[in-house]
Image (cartoon, rainbow, N blue to C red):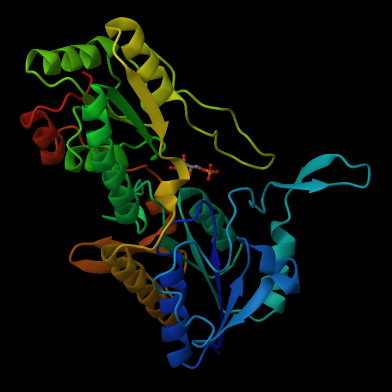
Length: 362
Ligand code: F6P
């Protein structure tokens, strides 16, 4: 009998998570099911205090809120969890059996796991162990190949574009170069979309290693055309030709990905050194993950949540909901996480950037 459903949110937060929760709770409740939320990823399957019953009354008003009422973590992999032993040492343990046993004991028939590639991979590993899982694709990076869009991306782009718009006036007032570093990990979607829409002079993306000479030539060319300022948008995962991606290492214990960052400052220093031009850099950072989701992200998140409940009803487990316009469909999670979605250098968006005179650093 289908009656108890679990939902969790994992990985970095993204605007629209609460809208997914809203849709899941409302549509599942209308089918007569009970919904429970697990705090901070799998926390609710370890500690009852982290398991919360969610009714339509509990989620009223959350649809437009950023963040997630369930909390999230990117250090919560149950297959490699840092646990402190009695001697105070940190050990990495596989606690997945315990989590699966608790899931079964609590009588859930399905787990809707909302997350990016890392969280979906964990969900798939649980599916292989027998947990009936459905994935919902979340990430501001938009780097999941199986779906046209992940929710959170549109809001992040809108925040970044707004910031770039604001930089124009200060850059122009001071005849400065402003270098903006945006998120996106190994994909240049946020940089490309916000850079084109924000009227950047230069956009640097991970898919196209850049030459600093080419960046400086573009800024010098601006001067020749009586434009004494420039806006450079650089993705955190961009790298110079023959160079390495700049990172700050792994950061916290239990975190599986390196913390990217620093390329914006590097580019700014190079411009200052080579051109002697007043140059400043800023990192937009987690501003891109915050705030109320755009209408686009809300609608997408609601559609994903409702579609996930339909998959639960049909028993289509170990699948992720995917938007392949105009259809909301389902793909095996294993296929969905196989490849990261990269910017297609032959696409019309890249061509548009070139056509309107944006330098891509090549
Ligand atoms: O994957 C989403 C993302 O915001 C990336 O764009 C960024 O590199 C990373 O998460 C930052 O992670 P954290 O919140 O752990 O600093």
